[in-house]
Amino acid sequence: MAVTTSTISCNSLAAFVVALSPLPLPSPPYWHHFEVVKPCGRINSCVVVGKDTLYIYGGMMEVRDQEITLDDLYTLNLSKLDEWKCVIRVC
Image: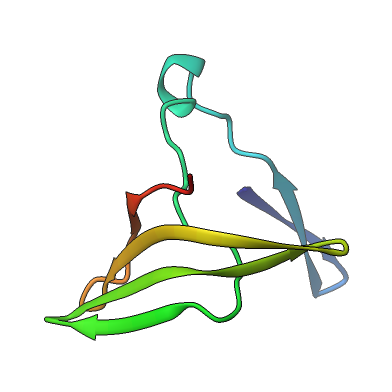
């Protein structure tokens, strides 16, 4: 969001008015190419750390009354913590 401020003076008292306006989005050819990759919430997964990388494999997730078994593999570089990588997708 873009922030704009203005000052209003009234008998030696000043009040600040802050207005928030949304930033313009980049043109469509650029912003729709980005996909956020991250593992969904899960239970009973296998989590391992090796050579500064976190690995998360499988587990289960609940959707209403159903339990779904996951067989995906995600990695996260622990020195950067910037992005998840999907190594094996859910089958």
